[in-house]
Length: 130
Image (cartoon, rainbow, N blue to C red; front, side, top):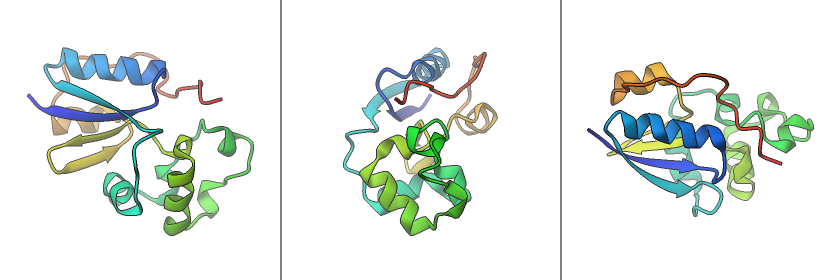
């Protein structure tokens, strides 16, 4: 089983359920606070891989919901700078197992990567970003 570094927003119910699924699947989960981690453009970029820039964003972020930030209109460099200054914009959770990093909790992708024995029920968006 894997040791999963799990960057979360503390208090997010969906992140809590996701951690339980990982733990129930036999993985060791080491939670980290996404909001206080000392991000750099390079460290953040390692989680996004080949995803399009708009896929890097947490669509439940207040700044996105208000229209202040429009992910489709932002360059990669701008996105990373915005996220460093406002981590609520970062799609979560961010997951790291050994050298591989991923953003978001795509159950099929995670199952293929490290294996999951349980699946989430219900929406995966944390609405407590306010």
